[in-house]
Image 1 (cartoon, rainbow, N blue to C red):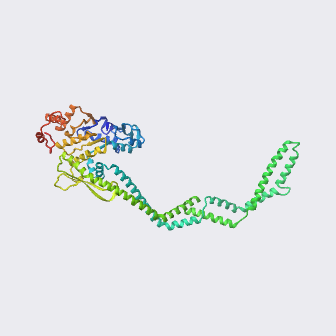
Image 2: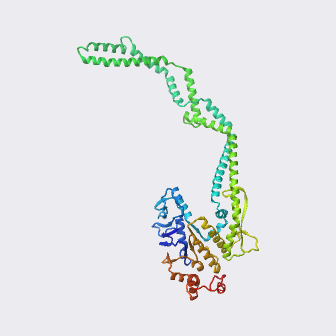
Image 3: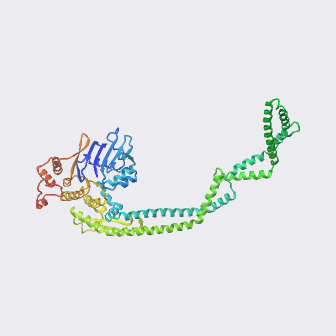
Length: 568
């Protein structure tokens, strides 16, 4: 239930706060005073798109804030799902900055616009005049019938199964497409796989080949350098090792007389051992090193193959070539086993279709059972609204394929004249008839939909007199079970409210005020007679408000002129 609505800097509204009654709140005002602006601000709070014209003063934020009583409404799961702290008194806030940016909050915690919209849709149902056209939506008609039939849990099962069915259809289509593409590419894939497999690729092979090639290509110069070094080490008497050995021995003889000489002898011995080790290594390398034209040619050919494959397959190294080989192998395996996978997918799809079909059949049975009761209750309300000869029927038409809500097409067939053939209500009903049909639907469904608040924006358009009074009684009965806000031009409807607000314009700004009992009498009298309030209008206003004895049935029946809408 909406307890309080605050609006700042929105369109013609500078600043206003509205404290609402838990039952029927009436909002009236002259055309152009700003009733639709107030509704626009509320729509903005509930997540409507910002069209850029919200701010009255472009230099300030536009702020719309609503405080809601959620006690006993079962909203806790929403807060848990979105990681928000639940509060029985919850505040929704929408801010439009001077830059046109939108910011949304639930209990001062920033949320996405989608989250604000989702919570708002569970709190308030706004019905404006143009929404009579929603009767042309089969989705709405189906939802209305399902709501009365209590199909919620069954519809959840069907929706889950239909979602799975849609996924399986996509997967099967993808498998078939892949199989078709595979058959076109199989020969080329097989060639690529064989070529890459025959190459016997090994990761790191290129670096090793390039290194060995470098040695073989420079074998002669490397051998010459090794020979020169070995000669320097091993030459008789003049060789480095022989000369250093003589020096080591000489220094060793001086150890007793000159200790430092012994230290030098030890260090020189270490150097000699290192040089011997180098000599041994060079000797071994020299023996292994030899020009091998055949090996050189083989390595050169291998490197050329690796580089050629990399260029052909747009690969940076052997690892990417190996990945390309594995992809080809996987695609070939998919082609080979494609028919098996398609058969499995077809079987899974058939099973899902059978299960979805069974759920659709159950939905159809429930709808078929509920349809007469649905029509009966709509007709009962329409009779109260002066449409006693109306024919209203719910027609279920089998559809060739399963859809999101089953396989039923749902039509509301209607005629205001029992002698005429019923046709789809959206095609045949007049504006006033559509308003009454929608009110009957809202009255039937609102409580079952468990919406805390319903807002009617001139749903009484096109009716007057006795019918307007009946419409007011239906709205008041609905308000006994939930909060209703009704924007109206009809005094018969306005008189039924628990609270009455008037929207007015002053100095180019839209404001709203709650009327006292006396002010309310004056406002309804003005709605009856215009700007010049007559004594008869005041008397009729008191009667509508229940402050004076109502006329007898005979005089009441003779008083209204329903064609003109005047009551006296």
